[in-house]
Image 1 (cartoon, rainbow, N blue to C red):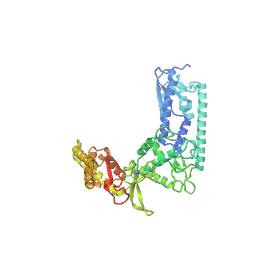
Image 2: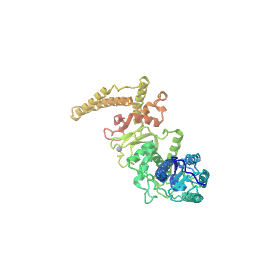
Image 3: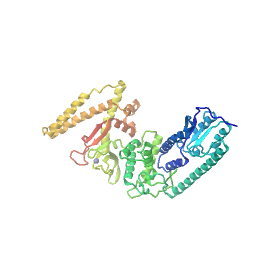
Image 4: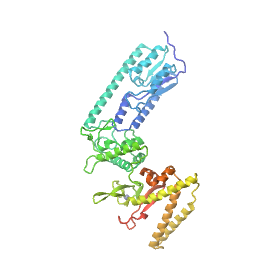
Length: 509
Ligand SMILES: [Zn+2]
């Protein structure tokens, strides 16, 4: 009996998904912790997108519109993942809404023999000359016995070999995981391309920098900026690190020499970590892997995920990295002060010697600097929020003239000093006074043009006060008002001695 052609103008279904082999490769990289699940999903999406062109080309000779169906399976990340678009396409075909199906290759369309049987049923019984074509050039005409035969054969071979490949890779990965060998994937950031057991010192230093920065309270987005500033490229994507990629990099156990399998550190029978055969990025002074630091990271990650999106427990000191060294300009980090070999209760902001360009020669009492900045910032925040309660839309800042006046006085005073027309004692005292006024005015102006985090100060927060806020929240408020806090060298050039508030210069945002 002669079959009729489907109605003219009826579209062809074009089905897209990436190959099983590509999917395996991506999964392997995710399982090895080389890329994040999000990055893997992104790679898959890109692969699927590319296929759309191929599929459209395969359908072209039929002169019908193409309706694209595409599935991304990695986001679900399971072996027997459902394919919602495939199901939709089969339903549309059964409902007579499609003139047939085209795909890049037959094993892209049908993952399992039973997928094929669902479609074959329809081709056999509908009585129409439905189209079926792939880019392989093989005859899989599902309306004929011969075509169905080769289709069945091919799908079952493809299914079998992809399962074998998957099993083989799994076994191999597991064996190496237990032996502590790294198992392929793109070369990991921080190690050499030609020998991934040896550090690439430049990249490793960058990993240290962002992990330390993150432990010190910098958000992942901030760490991502550090990577971008340094021109770092994610070896998996060939592009700058994304937020997800940065996060993966920061929390990566590999940096500490720990072997990962299926996203989990491998442990030995006695509860220790299975260590890899590569050089760790983080080492103790004795040269071994710094596992304490890894556990700090794990604790930080755990604390954060239960505490929600805000980084509550991450930052220990209010002004870490907000404070900058007045000599070299590099951010200063809060550190516990050690007195005669013991940890004291106090802390200091220090210029970070570990950074090659930092001078490492500046330090300031942490509690004293914090106290000054807290008073300045909180008073302004409270005032601004009260004003806002009364006047919802603050107009133009009314004290611009006052600020200009003070700035002119400072300039005049400095000119007098330069011309040696003023005595040292009165210069210093007057300058201090004028600068205090200027600081106050600038802070007032900063909160007047309030940025969103400041607007988030609610009456409840005001009632519980500054101390009722997490350090991260305090930092958000500080950053909304101040761009940085510069610590200048002591006037007499000596370190230590009494703390001099004049050394602290807030830079308003
Ligand atoms: Zn410095």
